[in-house]
Length: 210
Image 1 (spheres, rainbow, N blue to C red):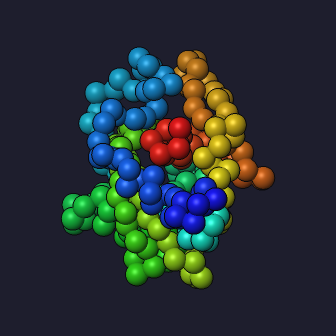
Image 2: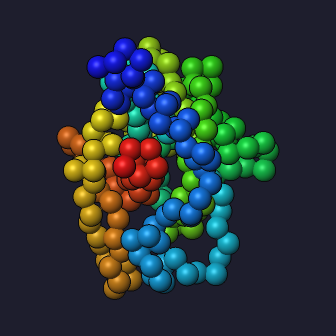
């Protein structure tokens, strides 16, 4: 391999792919509607709520990983699901990036001093009524996490090369008010990455790796 060419799925390669995007968080609106056009769940009159998540790419040199969480089973919504750290954008948050960093620290104790924000992906509109801004961050390895037990049961890393392999992007569905709802499903070991989280991962693949 040319010494000037970053190794595939390294942090350097990830940065280069993102930098090659003319405007990575612009473009067509991504979201659950791409699989479910015209579905009643997506045509409700309520305004979308703004949220932000951090896509934390951990810099393990030649083989980067993505840090994910398992939401607490005690939560009222989306309990036990695999997710990116993040949440609703508060009025006091100056930007989606600031909201993603705040939520990441509150949920898993990962401070912004160990995260380099490199940009954002297109907003992702979720069937749950949120417009989500996915914020991309490079995380320095060697961190220690402090999980907020009220929100998070576990945190774990998944190889970027696994998540960016379309062979691991399965289609699945479940019934919602007697109508079928489609989504991506990316099982990894005993973890099930699906729904909005998998949809955002698919967006990342389509924008940077497809």
